[in-house]
Length: 174
Image (cartoon, rainbow, N blue to C red):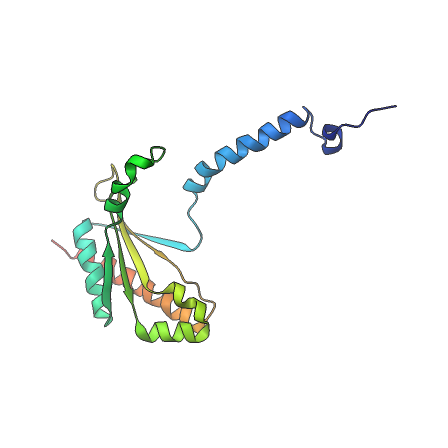
């Protein structure tokens, strides 16, 4: 009578131990894979022919031109630098990075009117970042709220309009 083992049932050619070792190896590789794949709800736009400071000024100007007020500028790279010693497995990816937050009260009222939990989408924000070792490469990144409701569509349109205006203004700087 033939003995039935788990490896025979799973059709694993080298046995169950090698199957589980393969699973462990894949799970260890997952963080590296996750870092190379950009999330679908994060949009990024390169700013060509500008500096970090000029891009920051252009973003603030674009926000204010929409009649909005910058609520906060978060020095993201500085925050990471303060905690860098406790995270030895990841190198600092940014030469410079900050997050600019702002909100439209009309848009906020529309979104929370659609569903109260959409308050999590406010304030809106756009990140400005420059990678280490690549001088002159400035990017704008933002979380797209999607287009599933009228309010979210308006927020998405606003973010895209601000990014477009920022890239135009940033190139005009001396």
